[in-house]
Image 1 (cartoon, helix red, strand yellow):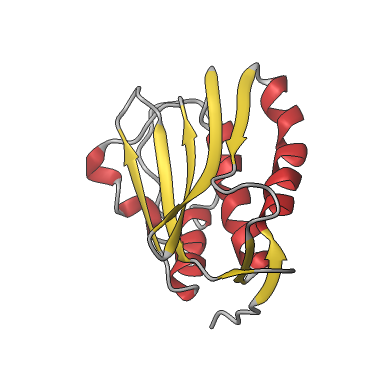
Image 2: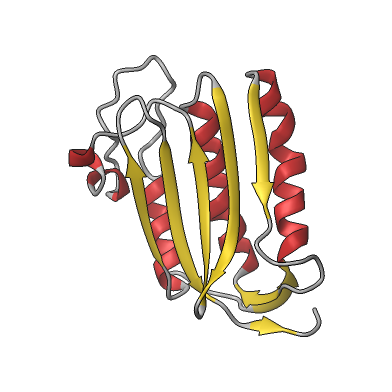
Length: 162
């Protein structure tokens, strides 16, 4: 059972802190690393479970760094009707379409022919469960050798102050 704690927070601060946390690791692998805020600074105070959102983004960014040998990683969000659409995009090894659903299953990892480290196979399953518990959806667009983009949407409840 996932317990959610919905609070108001400033999304830009979370996005900035993720950048500061991962930029050195990405640059150590000679990867370009950037992000995009889809709303002007000060205009996006969000109500959701900040800790769960941070865990999802952290997991997706970690995976992107792990499976990308060269190129770039980007992440961000933009408003899309009554949701915020988040993404983490990389130029990594990519994932065959036949594995797009199985990578979200517990203890399953895509069969990727790479020497990259493998984890427990729980990260994407947990991330998807968190997103779904916050009334969102998660999916991937990817092809082998073309990188991956992980998307998720969350209901967008904008407030005036945090």
